[in-house]
Length: 362
Image 1 (cartoon, rainbow, N blue to C red):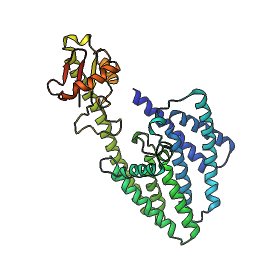
Image 2: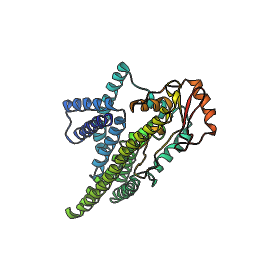
Image 3: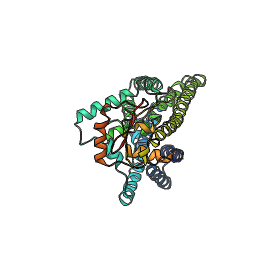
Image 4: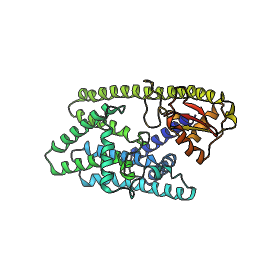
């Protein structure tokens, strides 16, 4: 229910951001429309701060498309598109920050992923480079699509920049393309490092922008030729749909395996006579080896992979097993006692000691 509710909110926020960017860019300049767009952005930002980066990427994309599709575009057209987007974003951001100052917010994301001030510039640059390269690693679902999209983006940008042999055209096209790429990775630039893929909403734009460009690019050679990128994009959408379905099927399978594992561990602990009187300590972590489970960040990640005794005992409580939580001293002592124990599911991986019961996952 939690994830379904979150997906509904995120879908609504995506729609609000997209609608705002479209109205600002392509529907004329009216103060009432800008006020409406500002309100929509505040609502989107309130659902998740990830949409700050998403709107930045959308804004850069809208400016890029307007420049890419108009061979005579110059600085005036660039600022004519960019200034309204920047103004509405700035107003929405200020209102959101004022609301945040009054209401408060959870600092977990900032404390976990914000690296500026804690690392040197060279370290941050190296980490950003490694994160971007990792997107094309074969272990990441959709990496092949991302690679093809990136190559198409570079090719069409280069052709558009050079086709008129105009310095103005070259400068504007390259400037907008660079802004477009920086917009997609704006969340990483702000935090100074990689973030979980589930927070990278802009990656959807990373793979879709080149194909929207392609429709415009090939459209110059006739309507029939324009069908080629549309057909290619349709095939990619189908392929991505299959990949996402596999990922979330694996997540459901992971939940089922978690429940089986929890019942097995809980049953074995309950079979110990003193299980109601001694604290239980769970050492290590466990990830299901099933080929059906694709682990991407928290998606497909086993509950037992998170490795915190308090968290895991609360999970076992949901399954009907109520065990005593250990204190800090008990957990420290358990690390020493578990050193020679075998790992689950082998015999004696769940063992009773004088003052505690230990489960060793790894």
